[in-house]
Image (tube, rainbow, N blue to C red):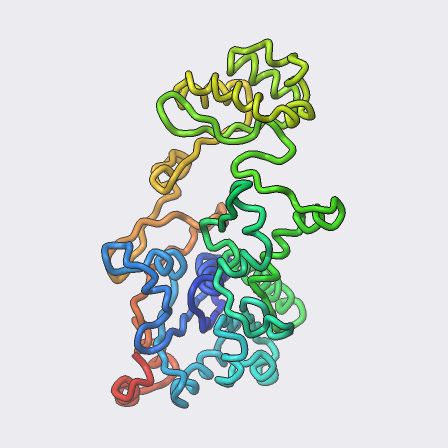
Length: 394
């Protein structure tokens, strides 16, 4: 049995945060009915057309194994259909603009009043209260407000994290919140009203920076790929191109690096290099000594030497390197799923059960399941035809 087999999720969702949460529920076997707008659907469908010139990469990532129903919620009949869907659901997830779901008649208080066992999840940028409650909240904007950008980059230049980290964080907390609510409902019979914001999720992930600021008087400085209090720690060049990350966190580790990898045993006991404290004070000279040695080695040789003596390291990959990574290949992480533009390669979800396979069903076309879902709700073919003709559904 897939863990969430039999759980029905209705998702009034768009972009990244909510779709990421519900896709993980779908991975575990939940039936996820994705409600999209007539005339375009989830706008993440059009972020790009990276996959065979017709499918957005974000949408492909976030929406496999879902059923797409396209409704015009500006029309009463569209709202009536959504109400019927929610009445049969275990979980309702939405990430419209703050207050929008309530104005459509799908606020948490109203839904829970008529369905106490329902689990409702509101995902937003900043929540329904506070001075930022109506503020727009794209991922980079929240990275800025939560201070992530302030500690990311070089000493000279702030940069954002290259993946939508605040959306992902909110989606992860929504996902774990739903699982917790399902466990509690199984024990008590009661549903739940969950509120998850991108800002709160990002603030939690920045807690160590806040503690450093509050108790040490200042936030950590931006240090690019190096470490503010550990040396050597960062990216070092090799002879045949490509950097290798080396992280030495102990003095015995430094001695191993100097003697067994860099072939510079005198550095292990040099008074300006022997302890981490003096290495931090002489960071530029330490890094220069490491660069001088790694630049004479091919990348594969350097990694081999580091691995042989147990020094933490990593190669600096890009998207091509990740796609070709032997760890994905040799652990059989690749699968194919269907989509409106043909088969799409994808990787298995991180949560792996030993006794069941993850659900890996197709990525839906806009409104692909509208007719089937309406028929399941009891609408006869003539009514479905009229709803299509009047633009209530697509």
